[in-house]
Image 1 (tube, one colour):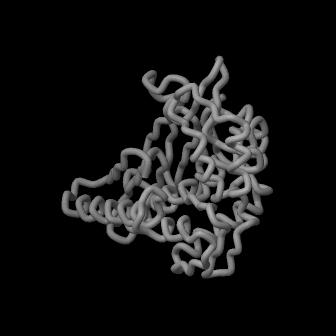
Image 2: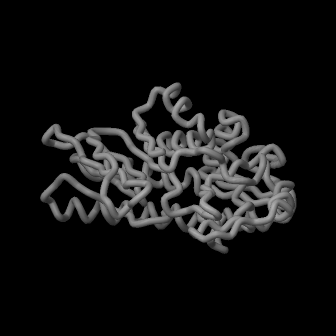
Length: 277
């Protein structure tokens, strides 16, 4: 989940709380095990090492691939789950190393969803190509966990996986959950915004911890799959509220991919959002 996970319940019933927390933990571990590209024992590894062979996937994986394909079309190719292969040359660790243009150019033939043959439930990619569901997997896990909490507990539960969160149902007092948005420029300084959330979900994307910097220029981890280079003039952080965490996460990512046009994109989408430049 790429960060700490927590579950908050509006209850004094310890047994109910334990049941929800245990269920949410199982959800987090299941999605992590099944869809992390850093494992060698799951469907993503099978796809990424298929070397041009056809791979048949299960229904859950097929739904996520369908969703990724739709996002690719909606974003005019900016959202691309095959761009993770660029991680072979880009290491966003806060350092000063920037790959040479030739190194990036060598990776580009392996990037592009349109090069993938996806005929549900079968997928075929060019040898060397990979997929990475990191842009949608965590948010999907949050929504599953919130749904599980609704089934197990009649009160309100806030699921927070690495800063992306969802609320199962309104609090019994009629009040809201208060959620702080970390300062993108100085995380130690506290929250840049305090959001009152009664229902729905929220997601944040940005380059607070994943960037490189060379000669005063900051390179965000958000890469343009068409060029292999970081998106220019993107906000430092984007936070969006939406009915589901999957939707909120999709909007934050697509906004960052639009660089300087992020604010306009979110305004047109008509969503509640916070942008840190």
